[in-house]
Image 1 (cartoon, each protein chain N blue to C red):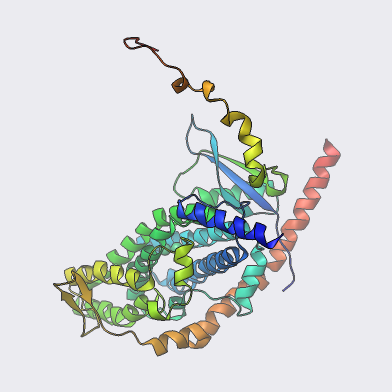
Image 2 (image 1 turned 45 degrees about the vertical axis):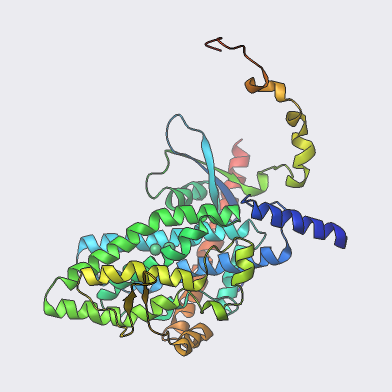
Amino acid sequence: MSKIEWPLWEVFIRSKQGLSHKHVGSLRAADEEMAINNARDVYTRRSEGISIWVVESKNVVASDPSEAGPLFEPANSKAYRHPTFYEVPEGIKHM
Amino acid sequence: MEKNNLDSLDTIFQDKVDREIKIEPKDYMPDAYRKTLIRQISQHAHSEIVGQLPEANWVTRAPNLRRKAVLLAKIQDEAGHGLYLYSAVETLGADREDTIDDLHEGRAKYSSIFNYPTLTWADMGMVGWLVDGAAIMNQVPLCRCSYGPYARAMVRVCKEESFHQRQGFEIVTQLAQGTPVQKEMAQEALNRWWWPALMMFGPNDADSTHTAQSMKWKIKRHTNDELRQMFVDATVPQAELIGLKIPDNDLKFNEETGHYDFGEIDWDEFWQVVKGYGPCNTERVSARKKAKEDGLWVREAANVYAEKRARRNKKVS
Ligand SMILES: [Fe+2]
Ligand SMILES: [Fe+2]
């Protein structure tokens, strides 16, 4: 069978006003217009969305999970960024 | 990569799985895990797609507009399920069209249940009630599968499946409570579908080669026999309630175990169908092949159109 494929697109859906778009999966489509229409049919058959983003998968730049240790290390050693790091004297309110 | 290094990566991987940490697409995973998932998820996708065919057989002959709209919506969901799953399989580095060609060339399988014909309208009821019912038993535990994209696809699928089962049960119930001829039609359909539905859970545990490894990897959470028992326990009382008889003379509630005992499955029939000699195997695969071939020009044209539009947009800007 000859191989004619459509590019792969990542689909992001905003489920309601006030929430961010969230990744839901991917699909194949010839162009961005078809990608939006297909995303509607594949991912919002039960009104799961009010807005759709599609991004061609090859344009997504991702961090490497095997490098996650060093990449996120700077945050790990800074416990003082969290409120629980600090001791609040007994009796102190609204803090 | 060095052997020692690989060993320790495998240990870290299994440790993550043991601690219920999901494996995501770019994470390290053993080759065998990746291969197993590609095989399982693509075959699951094929089952969703091929599964549309026996139901499509009744769309134009649905008894009324409501039934027709419901059946169409259900079939459209199955197409969606197939697409969620092809999307998941592509995260493993497999090519969607390659997996589809595997199906068309006979290298990949799909659920054997779809190799049975849908002879009467009552079969639409049985497919929803029993086939989707059995699929739900299989799929609910897959929502906790160790591979993130598969688990997430299953969550979406499971949300949609309960409508499928209910619409089927509604059809069966109405027939079972209808005229004697309608009731007979429902009973006859149950007689044909019951055993193939039980076969959907696969071979007995003793004969299931992949189960132990899949459970260690937490792809699978229950054995075939456990799932089959859960299905029987859930379904038998439903049949009783609407006055249909399960076609199994050995079926009996066991007070001691709290489960239904049931008769022996005809494994010869099961293997015959798996090996390609079921009533509709050839028909199903050739229908899929024809759909791909007939649609080729559409895909080609859409690509050319997309290119042309991109060129035109470039000129304008
Ligand atoms: Fe499905
Ligand atoms: Fe379904």
